[in-house]
Image (cartoon, rainbow, N blue to C red; front, side, top):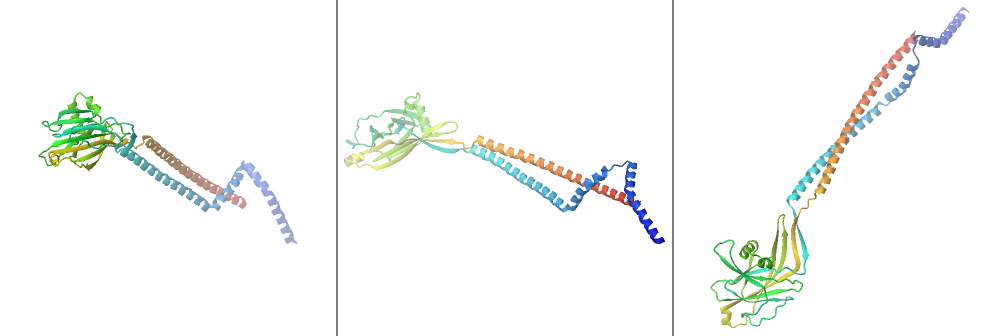
Length: 369
């Protein structure tokens, strides 16, 4: 009986103590002036801390992926920057190369008629028998070969000193060339030369741009000297009919323009029907001058380098460099921000862990009390 009463009174005392424990903590909290907010804040922090501590490997993987991705982007932009610099260097190099080495451009201009060219003949001891204009590339049969015949050519004799030797006097017979290329106008000239002691018999001629330049020149000797310096000499042989087809080439340089004649010649043997004695005594020469086609070939140097294209490429390159520098700066700032956030979260974790440790010790002390 005594043991039952003792146990009952112990249970009643324990129950009363358990019932009074909340009031005691409340009174103690109210007496110490400690509000309940820190416990609520700690309680609100603890679940997040549990979540952070629950998946540390996932957060580590995310941070690693972010850092790797940032480094990869920086590497890509560095490569693009190097490519942009190389492209700028290559563009400038190509522009300077094209500027110093222009490309030759050839165009053809069609004309209805040419200005009469100058045909300077150097017959020497030979004599001009006839000079006549014909059309449609047709030459009538010869009537009296070896005899002088009437002609219709405009010509002029010029005597001058050779440009390369001061003691050589040259005599040129300058003839006005054909003009009507549509009707295939030509000039047919005959020369005769008495028996000579030379091994080869030939007549030299030279073509120059315009006959009117000679007729209108005051110093005709000086004009012919300049022509001999700038144009080449060609010859045609006796006993043959030499057919010369001319084409005009106009070359435009950086500072001046020049005219050049290109020639295509064909040679046909003349069937001499004169007596043998006359054939041996007098050598005959035949030459024909005709325009090949109604086109003037214009040759000029063209610089293919486009400065605006080069400027546009350089602007794009510099814009890419600016964007790359801007992105690199942003990436560095982002990495620094991520680092600061990581350090802040780490400090928060340490603070939360210390708070939990303090709260746990406090609860244990209270329970022990």
